[in-house]
Image (cartoon, rainbow, N blue to C red):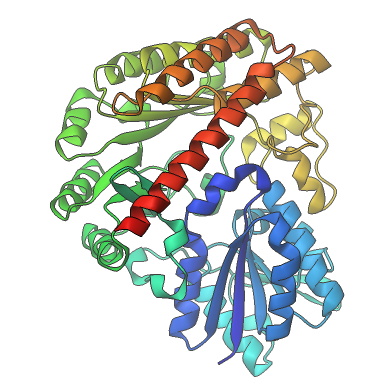
Length: 496
């Protein structure tokens, strides 16, 4: 059978993402395998690029497909694509995912990218593979971009599939066990129950990619596949990676209830704050859901209106007060600083809101990420208007990634170098130091975490990050704790 390699490169700054299965590639890979192709899926770190490239070249694949998002992902995917091409110029490199779907022509200018899959890849990948195998012209393959004598061609678009239950996925084509997260008696995996979102947040790529359409798997589909994963690997908990799990509340609650009956709990559900209420939280607790995620984005009403978030400061505070009454539910809340047009007052309001949320929801992790200018978004136009220089090529998109070394806020005139440093350290402390306290967790861990939370909150509140020795101490503490916990789990598993 012709071999197809599918690759997802996790940036080294996001190693925890290695634990989440590459679901997009798994859907595409299942379609290819069903059509008779030998599919090999890889999720790697940047340091694995060299060895995997050697392995792939020896296979003489029909093509190598990359799942690519904007920023460090596109940078490392470009690095590996160039390496493959330098060692075997005949190898076909195909890019898919949100970045090449929204920056298609720029990607096709690169010598190391042969073909771009635009939008959903299940049907496109099979059609492309069939045409490549036959050596046929690619003109008839829908939703791709390719080159003829260095000239880009874009084919007729493929309509979004209404019934996404037709897209199956087979976990047996992937070594699934590394993607199971153990936490005490929970063995968790992530899963997509839906695609897209009906809202139009100005900083988000999803409205452009999915045309503001939300399409859901049926409850039967979700339960069938998660029960299968339970039977195969013993999972008893799920992390839903949807953009918006509660668009259809009846379907969402039916899913949670059915899974509960199968012995599977839900540890993370994405919810909008304007749909959060006491009845919903009561039902989540009743059905054994243990965590929710929400994007509150900003503490400034002006910015919340500008980015089309459709919530207010008052709603954020009201939601925090409500969530504080549900200690059974762990909370992840995400905010953004350095949004285009942000004033110093807006920035201070957002930092203040983050600390308020932390105070009201002690079993919560509240993050503050620096804004990323993403292709296909309204906010990118604002950033360009205010001084952001558009990336000149695919590799240059690395500088929009707020986790990377070349990121710089150039679209906010009032920010000095000190202000930029403070926004970076605010992101680092909110993301990597100030963590939720687990009432059911280890008392020693919670005690130490509480101390670091206090110090970190003071730094963020006062925007004072001189000599951050506590940051390094915390990093060492977490590494030691994780090592000890992993060793304990290994001993327990071996004993069983």
